[in-house]
Image (cartoon, rainbow, N blue to C red; front, side, top):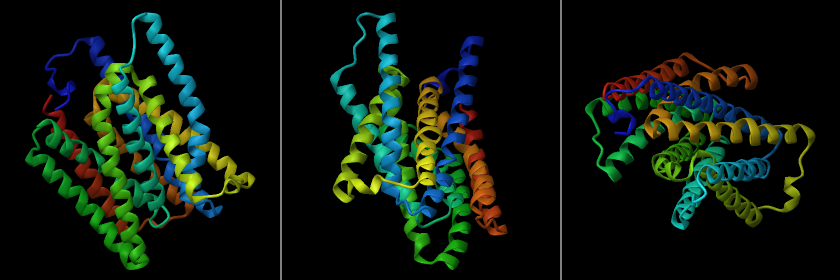
Length: 316
């Protein structure tokens, strides 16, 4: 259970802060929801997953450095003795590689095999893993309601999986497993982010985490690609710019701020809004199929998430 859920009574300023945290979490999820659409459009332009991820970092990392430095200056201005322990910096860097290198690469790679809609619905289940890891690492209780909610959501994913498997074959299996791996690793990132955010603040934390992830991505690219692979056509470059800003910088800071204000679990649940946005964009922009099976599966996933949210809220 998060610190947020342990507070039985909140003052009006504290309640306002909580609601602001929810808003930031929802906005972050909405901006992140555009990622799958942009990746699919990049694939149409013959840009592979790692090249897209690399351009994402090339564009985004300078923003992380500038915003992180401004955050450090602000903390020093308030407290001249402010400093960040070296072990906290190392942990943040490693955690950033988990959340924004490994998880992102698995997700980007998965989108080469499955639809943007299915990708987003699988990623939506990462709050379950946040709670599961909380039980494993911090001894938090896993309720029957949580298990029931998980089963409901995954039954919805199973409906879509079986339908897509019948059409796309083994691509569906490969893509689903890659994206599930992304959901698991991102949940790990979210759970362990809050203690570090409490130490250094959201801006500094996100800057260190994303910069470290960017370095890892660029090393990966240098090993597997030629520098000339970064030279893209004009349409692809516009997509890379959108990927680095709209789908990366803005939501990353919104999510980190939300975690710092309300905790990992409530922030994770705010991701409920993302599949709706992704479905609308995928159908309208990409022309993806949205059958009755997809609708039924999506409803089950969302019902499971809303049930999970409801029972988590009842703990407060």
